[in-house]
Image (cartoon, rainbow, N blue to C red; front, top):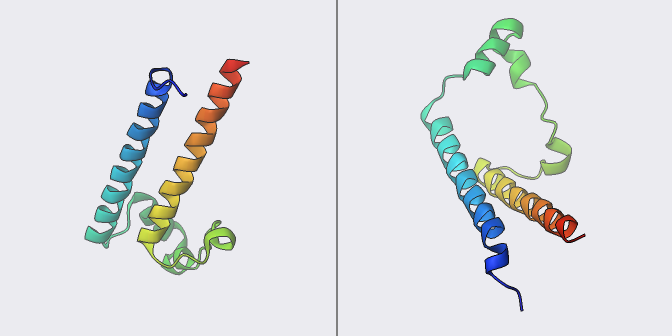
Length: 99
């Protein structure tokens, strides 16, 4: 049987990080929906190279995640990938501490 007290802080840390990521994604979508103006980095790129260049800029994630059409689905996939990555990292830390 697994002792909960032994893993209480790593589990609590993972839960806190997941909640923070979800809040960040929700705020990011709200800001993106509320503002149609380009942010600072987009404005610099538009001033330097023109708006046409920025619109034709390919995403490095297109070959892997090109099937995602909705920003909300992309956010959910990102949260799940982050959760998986954090679980792997915490498992590796716990595994290496035991050795």
